[in-house]
Length: 465
Image 1 (cartoon, rainbow, N blue to C red):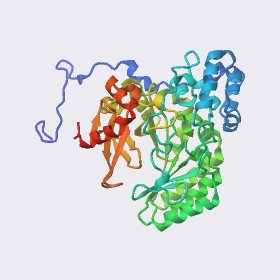
Image 2: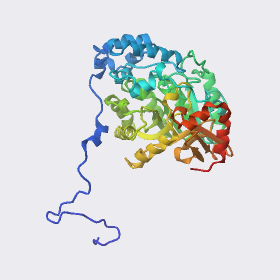
Image 3: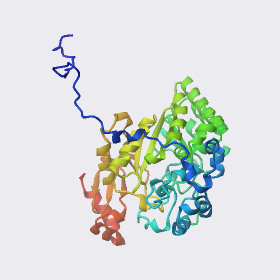
Image 4: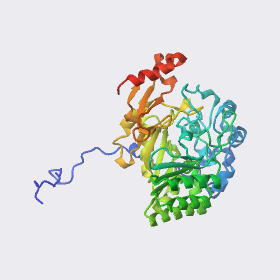
């Protein structure tokens, strides 16, 4: 091919040596921070685990047995690592939280106990009484309207070809920001839960419905958390769905990999069940994926990488869905590091959800504008297929909407309006920024009950801006 041929590329070289000339300066080693994964016996800094061997620590049964669910047990584990004031603050938080508390030794070991108040993992899983803010006036316990779109208990059919199957109501960890605090975990002093326990009768009704709807092709298996399904249940659910002619794709959704990767390292029976379902799917020409949930780069360790390598070697695609959380991942630096670190361990960053309106979680929410700004910084950081989409799961059942696709957004009142023509045509849905992050005028209007519906009417009259 001649140098001037249409498909040739120009070569820039040093005239003296003819060696290729670099167009970019040498890389700053700090930009490769995503490759530095925590390893070693980091758990020994926790007094209760100082004598725990690596063999014991990576045993999923030991992790489950020693998972902490009460403030006094946390105090026993930490001993002098946390102040008495912090523990009292935590006890007050336990009483006010709508979610039960459940924290594995692995997760506890990743928290920076020199500064637990600002630690991004503590913020997500351990509530403090001093940090609660009043819930938003527009909050509903089932803010996404999942139960309203459920033809049978635990099965949400909102999108035409996809359904969400809530197979179980327990998790290996309970997140303060959980959208399903109406059903997940034990009852608390604040919330009496809807029962979605694992039940053959309930499952049968869900499977009957799925089989009866030829438009359904995609099923998300969640809960609760699919991590907590027994191996036999993984096989049963996966096989029954894949054998339905209309089903083309299933996904097992789990926070568990982020908080207890030891299960994938040592629970061979469970991993084998997942692999068998994946193999069956491939044989039938159908897709079986695993969706997980990392929110901060500190949650990703060498343990995570080893666990994910086991799925990677089996050819199982893993995608990540994050939640945008104040003080956790709401800066370009942290979100960028999270995206790069996920990509490095062969996890595709898929979604970043704008924090739902969740009871007891107002201190963790951010504004829609925060998401818009973050997306601008993340875009172009890495390959497009490893760049997450920032979405609002529209309250009231509008489904996931690209954060940039709002119909109108008032930064003073914090009200944004959304439409979902392929989900619920002709309806409007509204998201509300946290009141404490609004300018003074907006805070004053929300403090006046008479202004609240007026703000909704105003956003309906606004055009995109």
